[in-house]
Length: 297
Image (cartoon, rainbow, N blue to C red; front, side):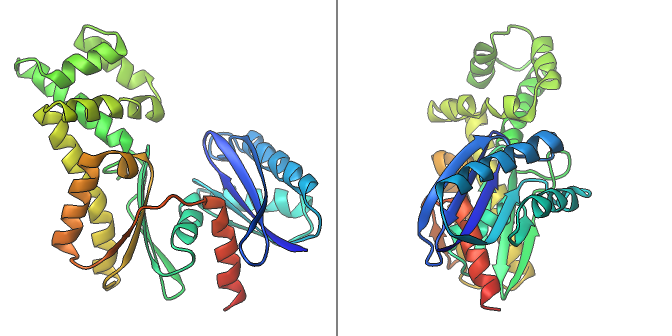
């Protein structure tokens, strides 16, 4: 039996799955983190170990392997990963970022847009065989609407309230309580010593405050939804996309109603007619649709 392997290599885990030529999943294996931007040698080792365990589960011939990994297009990481995998495995190996793998899976190979909003954010459009991105240039340039920027915006609100000697807000009380701190200096220390993920972990506090009526928290989440919508709007305007399919992924857009409502309101206002896809999808299956796409060219 001939099969296709898709690998979703993330910052916390690696998922490798095999699919037959009709798209049916026949086996799956999970391993440790495979994000090669964190540590190339360790990340690529985790990827290979996961693929090796997957291959032990199945018989037949792999005709296509696609690795999707965040940041793999940075520097020469794609060339390094290609060198390792092509020496190790006797079948065709292809490489892309995790957002493109997710785009193909979410839209089942069709043309359309994927907006991802987790710790970071990015927008991708597939149209007429070409791929186009909007945003997602990292937290120092443009990650608007991401979990990290939501948390940072909350921290900035607190800092401004401190500077202006404003009345204490629910947002400040709850974030201080969550972090177990009492002074502004401690919040500053937390912000500068913490990872993006640790800072983004404050998002549930912001959401809870918004649910309880805190105006600052509600404003932050509305802003996030509007900025995420602008990723899709920008792609539609730049590439003349009409009545698009728009899929969403990531906890910010999938789990926070304040963000969802602002996102859809902005799309309604700026685009008008579109089809929103909110169903969960298996990113690794993007490899199957990429293989189908390339086979049909």
